[in-house]
Length: 115
Length: 113
Image (tube, rainbow over all chains, first blue to last red; front, top):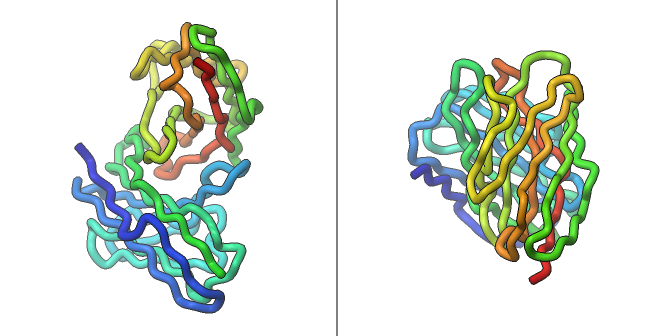
């Protein structure tokens, strides 16, 4: 069974701090994703990566960056945290199917609060 | 831009009632369709998926969904809900060939015993 592990379940940081959210998957998946989940807005894609050192912007990349140095690890970075980045962050991974028919597997999420 | 609409934000049902959650998308090409479920305190899990073939797909726990191409819809159904179905349900769409999913805003289902 696919396991997507996010390093923290809960995190509290201060405005202006640089914040790192880590995600590791154990199934050799090519694709990895970072979403944020907010009430009434569903899941919104921040960034995704389809290979090591490759990244693509999602719908809301502003204020975030990512790093994919190894296939199994995908990090989300808040360069200078702000209160409007308080949210639930979800990491996901999937195989790179031929016709995008591979489901995504999700981690448990990190609830991040910026004070 | 692609969008996915789930018009029901919160649905409250009694046990044994039938369920239908709406999902519409706005993309003219070929798509792959998914329903995910998030039980309280748990991670998102795949409920069912449609790629091609029979437009009526069956998923886990007695759920099914019907793809109606002419209506750009992929509604989720269950004939008789249980208290354990209380969760948030997300419809998601990906254009064929793309790798990223577009999610709806979710529908919270509360089942009253």
